[in-house]
Image 1 (tube, helix red, strand yellow):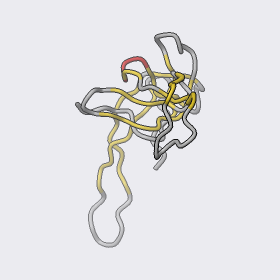
Image 2: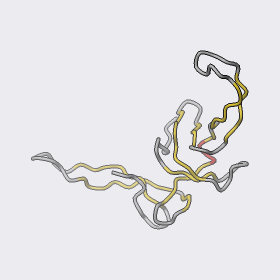
Image 3: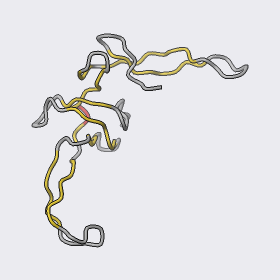
Length: 116
């Protein structure tokens, strides 16, 4: 499954018990269509002592959300927005012709959501 949400994107949760929260995407799983967002959907897990966690105890971690429950954040609108794709001419280096780059844009204000 091809997702338009990438690692390090800022997203806002629009459904579920974490609705209204926002954070940075830590992991994207394209097979299941789930993303893990920093400090969102936190759960407590009781773990036995092991090689990895010699102390054991209660560990807090983020669980993944389905990608349909989040929207990309627009830096200009400062909220989660629907987005589209635009092709923009990119300056070429040397004598090669100019290339077209795919960029994600906000549907409301036409602001580019990609960092490049």
